[in-house]
Image (cartoon, rainbow, N blue to C red; front, side, top):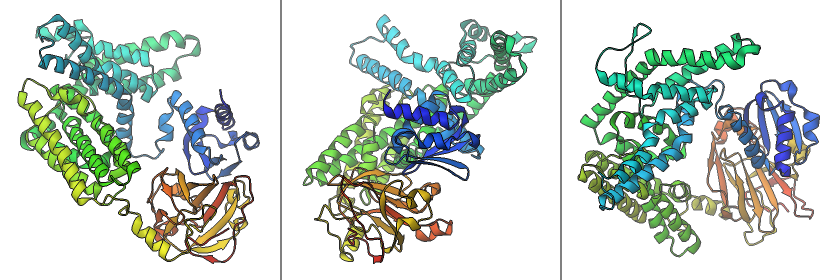
Length: 618
Protein backbone atom coordinates (compact mmCIF):
# COMPACT_ATOMS: atom_id res chain seq x y z
CA UNK A 1 0.00 0.00 0.00
CA UNK A 2 1.52 3.36 -1.04
CA UNK A 3 1.49 6.58 0.96
CA UNK A 4 -1.64 8.00 -0.69
CA UNK A 5 -3.63 4.79 -0.10
CA UNK A 6 -2.55 4.73 3.56
CA UNK A 7 -3.52 8.36 4.02
CA UNK A 8 -6.88 7.80 2.30
CA UNK A 9 -7.73 5.01 4.74
CA UNK A 10 -6.76 7.24 7.66
CA UNK A 11 -8.93 10.06 6.34
CA UNK A 12 -11.86 7.63 6.08
CA UNK A 13 -11.25 6.48 9.65
CA UNK A 14 -11.09 10.04 10.98
CA UNK A 15 -14.30 11.18 9.32
CA UNK A 16 -16.14 8.40 11.10
CA UNK A 17 -15.73 5.53 8.63
CA UNK A 18 -17.41 4.73 5.33
CA UNK A 19 -20.82 4.33 6.97
CA UNK A 20 -20.67 7.92 8.19
CA UNK A 21 -20.15 9.40 4.69
CA UNK A 22 -23.45 10.60 3.25
CA UNK A 23 -21.89 12.41 0.29
CA UNK A 24 -18.41 13.17 -1.04
CA UNK A 25 -17.45 15.80 -3.60
CA UNK A 26 -14.32 17.80 -4.28
CA UNK A 27 -13.25 21.17 -5.62
CA UNK A 28 -9.87 22.48 -6.70
CA UNK A 29 -8.18 21.88 -3.36
CA UNK A 30 -10.56 20.21 -0.91
CA UNK A 31 -12.39 17.01 -0.19
CA UNK A 32 -15.89 18.07 0.84
CA UNK A 33 -17.73 15.59 3.05
CA UNK A 34 -21.35 15.67 4.13
CA UNK A 35 -21.34 13.39 7.17
CA UNK A 36 -24.24 11.71 8.91
CA UNK A 37 -22.65 12.58 12.26
CA UNK A 38 -20.39 15.64 12.08
CA UNK A 39 -19.11 15.08 15.62
CA UNK A 40 -17.05 12.14 14.32
CA UNK A 41 -14.94 14.46 12.16
CA UNK A 42 -11.58 14.37 13.96
CA UNK A 43 -10.05 17.73 13.04
CA UNK A 44 -6.83 17.40 15.01
CA UNK A 45 -6.01 13.90 13.74
CA UNK A 46 -6.72 14.78 10.11
CA UNK A 47 -4.53 17.90 10.25
CA UNK A 48 -1.55 15.75 11.26
CA UNK A 49 -1.83 13.43 8.21
CA UNK A 50 0.76 13.73 5.43
CA UNK A 51 -0.46 15.68 2.36
CA UNK A 52 -3.28 17.25 4.41
CA UNK A 53 -2.86 21.03 4.49
CA UNK A 54 -5.87 21.88 6.64
CA UNK A 55 -9.15 20.50 7.95
CA UNK A 56 -12.16 22.70 8.65
CA UNK A 57 -15.88 22.56 9.42
CA UNK A 58 -17.90 24.82 7.14
CA UNK A 59 -21.66 24.71 7.65
CA UNK A 60 -22.92 21.25 6.72
CA UNK A 61 -19.61 20.38 5.07
CA UNK A 62 -16.53 18.89 6.69
CA UNK A 63 -13.59 19.84 4.51
CA UNK A 64 -10.13 18.29 4.14
CA UNK A 65 -7.75 20.56 2.23
CA UNK A 66 -5.34 18.50 0.12
CA UNK A 67 -4.15 20.87 -2.59
CA UNK A 68 -2.85 19.47 -5.87
CA UNK A 69 -3.44 15.82 -4.95
CA UNK A 70 -7.14 16.26 -4.20
CA UNK A 71 -8.27 14.26 -7.26
CA UNK A 72 -6.02 11.34 -6.29
CA UNK A 73 -7.52 11.16 -2.81
CA UNK A 74 -11.05 11.63 -4.12
CA UNK A 75 -10.65 8.60 -6.40
CA UNK A 76 -9.15 6.46 -3.63
CA UNK A 77 -11.94 7.23 -1.17
CA UNK A 78 -14.66 6.94 -3.83
CA UNK A 79 -13.32 3.49 -4.69
CA UNK A 80 -13.82 2.39 -1.09
CA UNK A 81 -17.33 3.85 -1.08
CA UNK A 82 -18.06 1.85 -4.23
CA UNK A 83 -16.85 -1.34 -2.57
CA UNK A 84 -19.40 -0.83 0.19
CA UNK A 85 -22.24 -0.15 -2.26
CA UNK A 86 -22.30 3.51 -1.28
CA UNK A 87 -21.73 4.83 -4.79
CA UNK A 88 -25.08 6.58 -4.89
CA UNK A 89 -24.10 8.67 -1.90
CA UNK A 90 -21.53 10.52 -3.98
CA UNK A 91 -23.77 10.84 -7.00
CA UNK A 92 -27.19 11.75 -5.68
CA UNK A 93 -28.54 14.37 -3.35
CA UNK A 94 -30.90 13.43 -0.57
CA UNK A 95 -33.57 15.72 -2.04
CA UNK A 96 -33.36 14.27 -5.53
CA UNK A 97 -36.73 14.13 -7.28
CA UNK A 98 -38.22 10.70 -7.88
CA UNK A 99 -37.89 10.78 -11.67
CA UNK A 100 -34.20 11.66 -11.59
CA UNK A 101 -33.62 9.03 -8.92
CA UNK A 102 -35.44 6.43 -11.02
CA UNK A 103 -33.31 7.21 -14.06
CA UNK A 104 -30.12 7.14 -12.00
CA UNK A 105 -31.10 3.82 -10.40
CA UNK A 106 -31.75 2.26 -13.79
CA UNK A 107 -28.48 3.62 -15.18
CA UNK A 108 -26.52 2.36 -12.17
CA UNK A 109 -28.07 -1.09 -12.53
CA UNK A 110 -27.50 -1.36 -16.27
CA UNK A 111 -24.03 0.22 -16.46
CA UNK A 112 -22.13 -2.76 -14.96
CA UNK A 113 -23.70 -5.03 -17.58
CA UNK A 114 -22.24 -3.16 -20.55
CA UNK A 115 -19.19 -5.44 -20.71
CA UNK A 116 -21.48 -8.47 -20.86
CA UNK A 117 -23.49 -6.88 -23.68
CA UNK A 118 -20.28 -6.09 -25.56
CA UNK A 119 -19.06 -9.68 -25.15
CA UNK A 120 -22.35 -11.21 -26.28
CA UNK A 121 -22.86 -8.71 -29.08
CA UNK A 122 -19.38 -9.08 -30.57
CA UNK A 123 -19.57 -12.87 -30.23
CA UNK A 124 -22.86 -12.82 -32.12
CA UNK A 125 -21.33 -10.53 -34.75
CA UNK A 126 -18.48 -12.99 -35.34
CA UNK A 127 -20.93 -15.87 -35.72
CA UNK A 128 -22.97 -13.82 -38.20
CA UNK A 129 -19.86 -13.15 -40.29
CA UNK A 130 -18.91 -16.85 -40.29
CA UNK A 131 -22.45 -17.85 -41.29
CA UNK A 132 -22.70 -15.18 -44.00
CA UNK A 133 -19.52 -16.37 -45.71
CA UNK A 134 -20.55 -20.03 -45.38
CA UNK A 135 -17.66 -20.83 -43.05
CA UNK A 136 -20.23 -22.04 -40.53
CA UNK A 137 -23.51 -23.72 -41.40
CA UNK A 138 -26.53 -22.49 -39.43
CA UNK A 139 -27.73 -26.09 -39.12
CA UNK A 140 -24.45 -27.46 -37.74
CA UNK A 141 -23.93 -28.44 -34.13
CA UNK A 142 -21.02 -26.00 -33.92
CA UNK A 143 -23.32 -23.14 -34.85
CA UNK A 144 -25.93 -24.21 -32.29
CA UNK A 145 -23.33 -24.30 -29.49
CA UNK A 146 -21.68 -21.02 -30.49
CA UNK A 147 -25.04 -19.32 -30.86
CA UNK A 148 -25.98 -20.53 -27.38
CA UNK A 149 -22.82 -18.91 -26.00
CA UNK A 150 -23.71 -15.61 -27.64
CA UNK A 151 -27.40 -15.73 -26.68
CA UNK A 152 -26.77 -16.78 -23.07
CA UNK A 153 -25.99 -13.18 -22.14
CA UNK A 154 -29.46 -12.08 -23.26
CA UNK A 155 -31.50 -15.20 -22.45
CA UNK A 156 -30.26 -15.17 -18.85
CA UNK A 157 -30.40 -11.39 -18.55
CA UNK A 158 -32.60 -11.67 -15.41
CA UNK A 159 -29.66 -13.27 -13.56
CA UNK A 160 -27.34 -10.40 -14.47
CA UNK A 161 -29.97 -7.83 -13.55
CA UNK A 162 -30.68 -9.61 -10.27
CA UNK A 163 -27.06 -9.24 -9.11
CA UNK A 164 -26.74 -5.63 -10.24
CA UNK A 165 -30.10 -4.63 -8.75
CA UNK A 166 -29.30 -6.39 -5.46
CA UNK A 167 -26.11 -4.35 -5.17
CA UNK A 168 -27.99 -1.17 -5.93
CA UNK A 169 -30.85 -1.86 -3.51
CA UNK A 170 -28.53 -3.32 -0.85
CA UNK A 171 -30.02 -6.78 -0.52
CA UNK A 172 -28.67 -10.33 -0.74
CA UNK A 173 -27.17 -10.99 -4.19
CA UNK A 174 -27.42 -14.77 -3.94
CA UNK A 175 -31.09 -14.81 -2.96
CA UNK A 176 -31.64 -12.35 -5.82
CA UNK A 177 -30.11 -14.85 -8.25
CA UNK A 178 -32.37 -17.57 -6.86
CA UNK A 179 -35.41 -15.37 -7.61
CA UNK A 180 -34.16 -15.01 -11.19
CA UNK A 181 -33.74 -18.79 -11.30
CA UNK A 182 -37.33 -19.27 -10.16
CA UNK A 183 -38.59 -17.12 -13.05
CA UNK A 184 -36.55 -19.14 -15.56
CA UNK A 185 -36.92 -22.60 -14.00
CA UNK A 186 -37.65 -25.14 -16.83
CA UNK A 187 -40.52 -27.03 -15.16
CA UNK A 188 -42.43 -23.79 -14.50
CA UNK A 189 -41.82 -22.73 -18.09
CA UNK A 190 -43.14 -26.09 -19.28
CA UNK A 191 -46.40 -25.53 -17.35
CA UNK A 192 -47.02 -22.49 -19.53
CA UNK A 193 -46.70 -24.64 -22.65
CA UNK A 194 -49.44 -27.05 -21.54
CA UNK A 195 -52.09 -24.43 -22.20
CA UNK A 196 -54.18 -25.27 -19.14
CA UNK A 197 -54.87 -23.02 -16.13
CA UNK A 198 -52.20 -23.27 -13.44
CA UNK A 199 -52.79 -22.60 -9.75
CA UNK A 200 -50.37 -22.02 -6.91
CA UNK A 201 -51.61 -21.95 -3.30
CA UNK A 202 -55.11 -21.87 -4.73
CA UNK A 203 -54.44 -18.71 -6.71
CA UNK A 204 -54.27 -18.49 -10.51
CA UNK A 205 -50.68 -18.29 -11.71
CA UNK A 206 -50.09 -16.29 -14.87
CA UNK A 207 -47.15 -17.96 -16.55
CA UNK A 208 -44.88 -15.78 -18.64
CA UNK A 209 -41.69 -16.44 -20.56
CA UNK A 210 -39.26 -14.38 -18.51
CA UNK A 211 -36.16 -15.05 -20.61
CA UNK A 212 -34.48 -11.77 -21.65
CA UNK A 213 -37.00 -9.84 -19.55
CA UNK A 214 -36.07 -6.72 -17.60
CA UNK A 215 -38.89 -5.24 -15.52
CA UNK A 216 -40.10 -8.37 -13.66
CA UNK A 217 -36.75 -9.10 -12.01
CA UNK A 218 -36.05 -5.43 -11.28
CA UNK A 219 -39.40 -5.05 -9.52
CA UNK A 220 -38.86 -8.33 -7.68
CA UNK A 221 -35.45 -7.36 -6.28
CA UNK A 222 -36.71 -3.88 -5.40
CA UNK A 223 -39.54 -5.50 -3.44
CA UNK A 224 -37.10 -7.98 -1.86
CA UNK A 225 -34.96 -5.11 -0.55
CA UNK A 226 -37.90 -3.91 1.57
CA UNK A 227 -38.57 -7.43 2.81
CA UNK A 228 -34.87 -7.69 3.69
CA UNK A 229 -34.95 -4.48 5.76
CA UNK A 230 -38.13 -5.58 7.55
CA UNK A 231 -36.72 -8.99 8.45
CA UNK A 232 -33.47 -7.38 9.61
CA UNK A 233 -35.44 -5.41 12.19
CA UNK A 234 -37.74 -8.12 13.56
CA UNK A 235 -35.63 -11.32 13.58
CA UNK A 236 -33.51 -11.87 16.73
CA UNK A 237 -29.77 -11.91 16.10
CA UNK A 238 -29.43 -15.40 17.53
CA UNK A 239 -31.42 -16.98 14.69
CA UNK A 240 -30.98 -14.35 11.98
CA UNK A 241 -28.30 -16.26 10.08
CA UNK A 242 -30.61 -19.16 9.29
CA UNK A 243 -34.11 -17.71 9.49
CA UNK A 244 -33.62 -14.49 7.53
CA UNK A 245 -32.51 -16.04 4.18
CA UNK A 246 -35.25 -18.68 4.47
CA UNK A 247 -38.01 -16.10 4.99
CA UNK A 248 -36.51 -13.77 2.37
CA UNK A 249 -36.83 -16.50 -0.26
CA UNK A 250 -40.13 -17.88 1.04
CA UNK A 251 -41.79 -14.46 0.91
CA UNK A 252 -40.24 -12.99 -2.22
CA UNK A 253 -40.45 -15.97 -4.60
CA UNK A 254 -44.22 -16.69 -4.34
CA UNK A 255 -45.15 -13.00 -4.46
CA UNK A 256 -42.91 -12.56 -7.48
CA UNK A 257 -44.57 -15.46 -9.33
CA UNK A 258 -48.12 -14.47 -8.39
CA UNK A 259 -48.01 -10.67 -8.51
CA UNK A 260 -44.75 -8.90 -9.31
CA UNK A 261 -43.72 -10.96 -12.34
CA UNK A 262 -47.07 -10.56 -14.13
CA UNK A 263 -47.15 -6.82 -13.31
CA UNK A 264 -43.67 -6.43 -14.78
CA UNK A 265 -44.80 -8.37 -17.83
CA UNK A 266 -47.87 -6.14 -18.27
CA UNK A 267 -45.72 -3.02 -18.04
CA UNK A 268 -43.41 -4.54 -20.62
CA UNK A 269 -46.42 -5.18 -22.85
CA UNK A 270 -47.39 -1.52 -22.48
CA UNK A 271 -43.93 -0.51 -23.59
CA UNK A 272 -44.30 -3.00 -26.45
CA UNK A 273 -47.43 -1.24 -27.74
CA UNK A 274 -45.77 2.22 -27.49
CA UNK A 275 -42.72 1.08 -29.45
CA UNK A 276 -44.89 -0.77 -31.95
CA UNK A 277 -46.95 2.37 -32.51
CA UNK A 278 -43.81 4.46 -33.06
CA UNK A 279 -42.35 1.88 -35.44
CA UNK A 280 -45.66 1.76 -37.33
CA UNK A 281 -46.49 5.45 -37.62
CA UNK A 282 -43.12 7.23 -37.20
CA UNK A 283 -40.24 4.76 -37.58
CA UNK A 284 -37.92 7.63 -38.50
CA UNK A 285 -38.40 9.49 -35.22
CA UNK A 286 -36.14 7.68 -32.69
CA UNK A 287 -33.08 7.13 -34.96
CA UNK A 288 -33.29 10.73 -36.20
CA UNK A 289 -33.42 12.24 -32.72
CA UNK A 290 -30.70 10.00 -31.27
CA UNK A 291 -28.51 10.30 -34.36
CA UNK A 292 -28.70 14.08 -34.15
CA UNK A 293 -28.38 14.64 -30.43
CA UNK A 294 -26.20 11.73 -29.29
CA UNK A 295 -23.18 14.06 -28.80
CA UNK A 296 -25.21 16.15 -26.36
CA UNK A 297 -26.47 13.03 -24.57
CA UNK A 298 -22.91 11.78 -24.15
CA UNK A 299 -21.72 15.19 -23.01
CA UNK A 300 -24.25 15.33 -20.14
CA UNK A 301 -23.97 11.61 -19.40
CA UNK A 302 -27.57 10.78 -20.32
CA UNK A 303 -26.75 8.29 -23.09
CA UNK A 304 -26.62 5.50 -20.50
CA UNK A 305 -30.25 6.24 -19.61
CA UNK A 306 -31.24 4.75 -22.99
CA UNK A 307 -29.81 1.33 -22.13
CA UNK A 308 -32.78 0.22 -19.94
CA UNK A 309 -35.19 1.21 -22.73
CA UNK A 310 -33.14 -0.69 -25.30
CA UNK A 311 -33.10 -3.73 -23.01
CA UNK A 312 -36.89 -3.57 -22.64
CA UNK A 313 -37.30 -3.36 -26.39
CA UNK A 314 -34.95 -6.27 -27.00
CA UNK A 315 -36.80 -8.36 -24.41
CA UNK A 316 -40.08 -7.81 -26.26
CA UNK A 317 -39.00 -7.81 -29.91
CA UNK A 318 -35.66 -9.71 -29.90
CA UNK A 319 -34.33 -6.78 -31.91
CA UNK A 320 -33.27 -3.28 -31.02
CA UNK A 321 -33.83 0.09 -32.74
CA UNK A 322 -33.03 2.61 -29.99
CA UNK A 323 -29.29 2.40 -29.36
CA UNK A 324 -28.38 0.35 -32.44
CA UNK A 325 -29.26 2.65 -35.37
CA UNK A 326 -28.98 5.93 -33.45
CA UNK A 327 -25.51 5.40 -32.02
CA UNK A 328 -24.24 3.64 -35.12
CA UNK A 329 -25.05 6.93 -36.87
CA UNK A 330 -23.55 9.08 -34.11
CA UNK A 331 -20.29 7.14 -33.98
CA UNK A 332 -19.80 7.24 -37.74
CA UNK A 333 -20.59 10.97 -37.85
CA UNK A 334 -17.98 11.66 -35.15
CA UNK A 335 -15.46 9.61 -37.12
CA UNK A 336 -16.16 11.68 -40.24
CA UNK A 337 -15.82 14.86 -38.18
CA UNK A 338 -12.44 13.73 -36.86
CA UNK A 339 -11.01 12.78 -40.25
CA UNK A 340 -12.19 16.10 -41.73
CA UNK A 341 -10.51 17.92 -38.85
CA UNK A 342 -7.31 15.95 -39.41
CA UNK A 343 -7.27 17.08 -43.03
CA UNK A 344 -8.06 20.70 -42.15
CA UNK A 345 -5.27 20.67 -39.56
CA UNK A 346 -2.66 19.07 -41.83
CA UNK A 347 -0.27 22.00 -41.30
CA UNK A 348 -0.50 21.41 -37.55
CA UNK A 349 0.99 17.91 -37.40
CA UNK A 350 0.39 17.32 -33.70
CA UNK A 351 -3.31 18.21 -33.69
CA UNK A 352 -3.81 16.54 -37.05
CA UNK A 353 -2.47 13.25 -35.68
CA UNK A 354 -4.67 13.58 -32.61
CA UNK A 355 -7.73 14.15 -34.82
CA UNK A 356 -6.80 11.18 -37.02
CA UNK A 357 -6.48 8.82 -34.05
CA UNK A 358 -9.78 10.14 -32.64
CA UNK A 359 -11.44 9.25 -35.94
CA UNK A 360 -10.22 5.66 -35.65
CA UNK A 361 -11.42 5.32 -32.05
CA UNK A 362 -14.82 6.70 -33.09
CA UNK A 363 -15.09 3.90 -35.66
CA UNK A 364 -14.71 1.45 -32.78
CA UNK A 365 -17.49 3.10 -30.81
CA UNK A 366 -15.51 5.48 -28.57
CA UNK A 367 -16.47 9.05 -29.46
CA UNK A 368 -15.33 10.99 -26.40
CA UNK A 369 -11.89 11.94 -27.85
CA UNK A 370 -13.55 13.39 -30.94
CA UNK A 371 -16.43 14.92 -28.99
CA UNK A 372 -14.30 16.84 -26.50
CA UNK A 373 -11.22 17.34 -28.64
CA UNK A 374 -12.93 18.51 -31.84
CA UNK A 375 -16.74 18.68 -31.88
CA UNK A 376 -17.04 20.87 -28.79
CA UNK A 377 -13.77 22.71 -29.35
CA UNK A 378 -14.15 24.34 -32.75
CA UNK A 379 -16.85 26.70 -33.99
CA UNK A 380 -19.84 25.23 -35.84
CA UNK A 381 -18.51 21.66 -35.57
CA UNK A 382 -21.26 20.60 -33.17
CA UNK A 383 -23.91 21.95 -35.54
CA UNK A 384 -22.31 20.02 -38.40
CA UNK A 385 -22.41 16.81 -36.34
CA UNK A 386 -26.06 17.36 -35.37
CA UNK A 387 -27.10 18.01 -38.98
CA UNK A 388 -25.21 14.99 -40.32
CA UNK A 389 -26.50 12.75 -37.52
CA UNK A 390 -30.08 13.84 -38.06
CA UNK A 391 -30.02 13.17 -41.80
CA UNK A 392 -28.29 9.79 -41.47
CA UNK A 393 -30.64 8.87 -38.62
CA UNK A 394 -33.60 9.79 -40.79
CA UNK A 395 -32.45 7.33 -43.45
CA UNK A 396 -31.90 4.64 -40.80
CA UNK A 397 -35.42 5.24 -39.49
CA UNK A 398 -37.13 5.30 -42.88
CA UNK A 399 -35.47 2.02 -43.86
CA UNK A 400 -36.21 0.65 -40.34
CA UNK A 401 -32.82 -0.96 -39.76
CA UNK A 402 -32.38 -2.81 -36.47
CA UNK A 403 -29.69 -4.61 -34.50
CA UNK A 404 -30.06 -8.32 -33.75
CA UNK A 405 -28.38 -7.99 -30.34
CA UNK A 406 -28.18 -5.48 -27.51
CA UNK A 407 -24.71 -4.00 -27.83
CA UNK A 408 -22.81 -0.70 -28.13
CA UNK A 409 -22.45 0.09 -31.81
CA UNK A 410 -19.31 0.44 -33.90
CA UNK A 411 -17.88 -0.67 -37.23
CA UNK A 412 -16.90 -3.91 -35.45
CA UNK A 413 -20.50 -4.75 -34.53
CA UNK A 414 -21.93 -3.94 -37.97
CA UNK A 415 -22.55 -7.69 -38.59
CA UNK A 416 -25.26 -7.47 -35.90
CA UNK A 417 -27.39 -5.96 -38.67
CA UNK A 418 -27.11 -9.19 -40.68
CA UNK A 419 -30.57 -10.72 -40.31
CA UNK A 420 -33.00 -12.85 -42.28
CA UNK A 421 -33.85 -9.67 -44.17
CA UNK A 422 -30.81 -8.97 -46.40
CA UNK A 423 -31.93 -5.36 -46.93
CA UNK A 424 -31.34 -4.69 -43.22
CA UNK A 425 -27.58 -5.12 -43.58
CA UNK A 426 -27.46 -3.27 -46.90
CA UNK A 427 -29.31 -0.30 -45.43
CA UNK A 428 -27.08 -0.37 -42.34
CA UNK A 429 -24.02 -0.07 -44.59
CA UNK A 430 -25.66 2.79 -46.49
CA UNK A 431 -26.46 4.45 -43.15
CA UNK A 432 -22.80 4.18 -42.13
CA UNK A 433 -21.67 5.74 -45.41
CA UNK A 434 -24.19 8.57 -45.19
CA UNK A 435 -23.22 9.35 -41.59
CA UNK A 436 -19.48 9.28 -42.24
CA UNK A 437 -19.60 11.22 -45.52
CA UNK A 438 -21.98 13.91 -44.24
CA UNK A 439 -19.99 14.28 -41.02
CA UNK A 440 -16.83 14.70 -43.09
CA UNK A 441 -18.29 17.07 -45.72
CA UNK A 442 -20.20 19.31 -43.30
CA UNK A 443 -17.16 19.62 -41.02
CA UNK A 444 -14.65 20.16 -43.81
CA UNK A 445 -16.63 22.89 -45.56
CA UNK A 446 -18.62 24.60 -42.78
CA UNK A 447 -16.77 24.17 -39.47
CA UNK A 448 -14.01 26.58 -38.48
CA UNK A 449 -11.16 24.14 -37.87
CA UNK A 450 -7.74 25.65 -38.12
CA UNK A 451 -5.26 26.98 -35.57
CA UNK A 452 -6.54 30.53 -35.94
CA UNK A 453 -10.25 29.68 -35.78
CA UNK A 454 -10.40 28.19 -32.30
CA UNK A 455 -13.39 29.62 -30.48
CA UNK A 456 -11.04 31.25 -27.99
CA UNK A 457 -8.99 33.25 -30.50
CA UNK A 458 -11.21 36.30 -30.79
CA UNK A 459 -11.21 36.68 -27.03
CA UNK A 460 -7.46 36.08 -26.91
CA UNK A 461 -6.71 38.81 -29.45
CA UNK A 462 -9.00 41.17 -27.58
CA UNK A 463 -7.11 40.54 -24.34
CA UNK A 464 -3.71 40.76 -25.98
CA UNK A 465 -4.42 44.06 -27.68
CA UNK A 466 -5.51 45.73 -24.45
CA UNK A 467 -2.81 44.44 -22.09
CA UNK A 468 0.87 44.00 -21.58
CA UNK A 469 1.05 40.23 -22.11
CA UNK A 470 4.66 39.09 -22.37
CA UNK A 471 4.07 35.73 -24.02
CA UNK A 472 7.71 35.23 -24.88
CA UNK A 473 8.92 35.38 -21.27
CA UNK A 474 8.55 32.04 -19.45
CA UNK A 475 9.39 33.73 -16.13
CA UNK A 476 6.49 36.15 -16.39
CA UNK A 477 3.46 35.74 -14.16
CA UNK A 478 0.65 38.02 -15.26
CA UNK A 479 -2.73 39.07 -13.96
CA UNK A 480 -5.35 36.50 -15.08
CA UNK A 481 -8.11 39.11 -14.90
CA UNK A 482 -8.71 42.86 -14.75
CA UNK A 483 -9.33 44.28 -11.29
CA UNK A 484 -7.87 45.59 -8.00
CA UNK A 485 -5.05 43.70 -6.30
CA UNK A 486 -5.19 42.89 -2.61
CA UNK A 487 -3.09 40.90 -0.18
CA UNK A 488 -4.17 37.32 0.44
CA UNK A 489 -4.55 38.11 4.15
CA UNK A 490 -7.64 40.17 3.23
CA UNK A 491 -9.45 37.24 1.63
CA UNK A 492 -12.49 36.01 3.55
CA UNK A 493 -11.43 32.37 3.49
CA UNK A 494 -8.96 31.05 6.04
CA UNK A 495 -7.38 28.57 3.63
CA UNK A 496 -6.31 31.39 1.32
CA UNK A 497 -5.78 34.18 3.87
CA UNK A 498 -3.46 31.99 5.98
CA UNK A 499 -1.57 31.00 2.83
CA UNK A 500 -1.91 27.31 3.65
CA UNK A 501 -1.92 26.46 -0.08
CA UNK A 502 0.92 28.83 -0.87
CA UNK A 503 1.66 32.50 -1.38
CA UNK A 504 0.10 34.63 -4.07
CA UNK A 505 -2.28 37.50 -4.61
CA UNK A 506 -6.01 38.16 -4.70
CA UNK A 507 -7.83 40.24 -7.31
CA UNK A 508 -11.18 41.97 -6.93
CA UNK A 509 -12.10 41.27 -10.52
CA UNK A 510 -13.84 43.63 -12.89
CA UNK A 511 -13.99 41.38 -15.93
CA UNK A 512 -15.73 38.31 -17.31
CA UNK A 513 -12.73 36.53 -18.85
CA UNK A 514 -10.21 34.73 -16.65
CA UNK A 515 -6.98 34.05 -18.54
CA UNK A 516 -3.81 32.03 -18.12
CA UNK A 517 -1.33 33.76 -15.78
CA UNK A 518 1.73 32.30 -17.52
CA UNK A 519 3.12 30.33 -20.44
CA UNK A 520 2.75 26.59 -19.88
CA UNK A 521 0.08 23.91 -19.87
CA UNK A 522 -3.27 23.48 -18.14
CA UNK A 523 -2.45 20.84 -15.53
CA UNK A 524 -5.93 20.83 -13.96
CA UNK A 525 -9.26 22.19 -15.14
CA UNK A 526 -12.25 21.51 -12.95
CA UNK A 527 -15.55 20.68 -14.70
CA UNK A 528 -17.32 23.33 -12.64
CA UNK A 529 -15.02 25.99 -14.17
CA UNK A 530 -14.38 27.67 -10.81
CA UNK A 531 -10.65 26.81 -10.72
CA UNK A 532 -7.78 25.74 -12.91
CA UNK A 533 -4.09 25.03 -12.56
CA UNK A 534 -1.23 26.08 -14.81
CA UNK A 535 2.20 24.47 -14.80
CA UNK A 536 4.65 26.92 -16.33
CA UNK A 537 7.40 25.97 -18.76
CA UNK A 538 9.81 26.28 -15.81
CA UNK A 539 7.76 23.91 -13.65
CA UNK A 540 6.08 26.47 -11.38
CA UNK A 541 2.56 25.37 -10.40
CA UNK A 542 -0.07 28.12 -10.26
CA UNK A 543 -3.63 27.75 -9.03
CA UNK A 544 -6.28 30.26 -10.13
CA UNK A 545 -9.38 30.02 -7.94
CA UNK A 546 -12.36 32.10 -9.10
CA UNK A 547 -14.42 33.26 -6.14
CA UNK A 548 -15.02 31.80 -2.68
CA UNK A 549 -17.05 28.58 -2.34
CA UNK A 550 -18.17 28.97 -5.97
CA UNK A 551 -17.77 25.21 -6.41
CA UNK A 552 -21.25 25.00 -4.89
CA UNK A 553 -22.69 26.53 -8.08
CA UNK A 554 -21.79 23.26 -9.84
CA UNK A 555 -20.71 25.05 -13.01
CA UNK A 556 -23.63 27.47 -13.32
CA UNK A 557 -22.33 30.85 -14.39
CA UNK A 558 -19.02 29.42 -15.66
CA UNK A 559 -18.14 28.62 -19.27
CA UNK A 560 -14.91 26.74 -19.86
CA UNK A 561 -13.02 27.97 -22.93
CA UNK A 562 -10.06 25.59 -22.92
CA UNK A 563 -9.19 21.95 -22.27
CA UNK A 564 -7.02 20.17 -19.76
CA UNK A 565 -3.46 19.57 -20.99
CA UNK A 566 -3.76 22.40 -23.55
CA UNK A 567 -0.57 24.38 -24.13
CA UNK A 568 -1.33 28.03 -23.35
CA UNK A 569 0.36 31.41 -23.36
CA UNK A 570 0.01 34.15 -20.78
CA UNK A 571 -3.27 35.90 -21.51
CA UNK A 572 -5.01 32.99 -23.23
CA UNK A 573 -8.66 32.92 -22.06
CA UNK A 574 -9.50 29.88 -19.91
CA UNK A 575 -12.90 30.61 -18.31
CA UNK A 576 -15.75 33.01 -19.08
CA UNK A 577 -18.01 33.87 -16.13
CA UNK A 578 -21.46 35.40 -15.78
CA UNK A 579 -20.60 37.92 -13.06
CA UNK A 580 -24.13 39.22 -12.67
CA UNK A 581 -25.57 35.75 -12.13
CA UNK A 582 -22.85 34.61 -9.70
CA UNK A 583 -22.98 37.76 -7.60
CA UNK A 584 -26.78 37.57 -7.55
CA UNK A 585 -26.41 34.14 -5.94
CA UNK A 586 -24.47 35.83 -3.14
CA UNK A 587 -20.95 34.65 -3.94
CA UNK A 588 -17.77 36.67 -3.48
CA UNK A 589 -15.90 36.67 -6.81
CA UNK A 590 -12.50 37.60 -5.41
CA UNK A 591 -10.07 35.59 -7.56
CA UNK A 592 -6.95 34.10 -6.02
CA UNK A 593 -3.68 33.40 -7.83
CA UNK A 594 -1.69 30.95 -5.70
CA UNK A 595 1.80 29.65 -6.38
CA UNK A 596 1.53 26.16 -4.91
CA UNK A 597 5.03 25.12 -5.98
CA UNK A 598 7.52 28.02 -6.26
CA UNK A 599 10.12 25.73 -7.85
CA UNK A 600 12.66 26.31 -5.07
CA UNK A 601 12.89 30.05 -5.54
CA UNK A 602 11.16 33.02 -4.02
CA UNK A 603 8.59 34.59 -6.32
CA UNK A 604 7.48 38.04 -5.24
CA UNK A 605 4.18 39.30 -6.65
CA UNK A 606 2.58 42.73 -6.61
CA UNK A 607 -0.28 42.89 -4.10
CA UNK A 608 -1.57 46.46 -4.51
CA UNK A 609 -2.89 48.64 -7.32
CA UNK A 610 -5.05 48.15 -10.37
CA UNK A 611 -4.19 45.66 -13.11
CA UNK A 612 -5.43 44.67 -16.54
CA UNK A 613 -5.41 41.12 -17.80
CA UNK A 614 -1.85 40.33 -18.86
CA UNK A 615 -0.08 42.93 -16.70
CA UNK A 616 3.09 41.53 -15.12
CA UNK A 617 2.83 40.72 -11.43
CA UNK A 618 6.45 39.68 -10.75
